[in-house]
Length: 239
Image 1 (cartoon, rainbow, N blue to C red):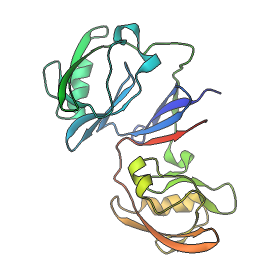
Image 2: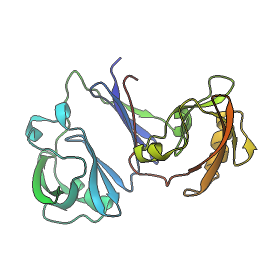
Image 3: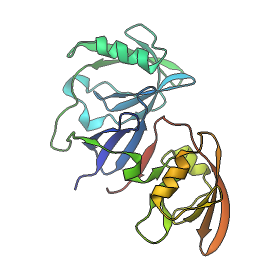
């Protein structure tokens, strides 16, 4: 089975599945702050410092018209056709105003230098290594708790199956894969449904106290529930 690139939106709960290389990548996208530039496989994100490229896959999905068009992670999007988009909403309106087949120019700031990238508004190249398939999915199906990680509830205990999808959150997390969860904010948990229900009641930005068991020893750790939205990634070798 081919590995896939999955774009997830927790707001619209829509998924587009791409076959892409040898990695599985899941991006959590917020329609208000993120935009997928499908022509070259790039994800734009609206942050505090403006619109930037957070993911740029380029490569074999580009149509012939866009073979020389390239965006890089960290590129700042300053202009589109000479006009500055302040928000993703602005960018989406500008993009929608471009007719299919026409080209648009992005003014990019890359490593402090101005760069112009010309992109033709066309569908991504169809080839035997890529397929697009609309699906529906929600975080309950994934058993994903942002800020905590992916939960394994197949056995008698609730265990951490994978780290939080945001690399920065995962790096600073006190949790480790294999940790068993016993309590959240002093309340016992015995199922993912219960764990998820209690976690949803916690406000973004608040601290969450977890009682875990690691290598036979009980620990109390604290994590912060992240703000909703923004691009995050889960990578694995095989699906």
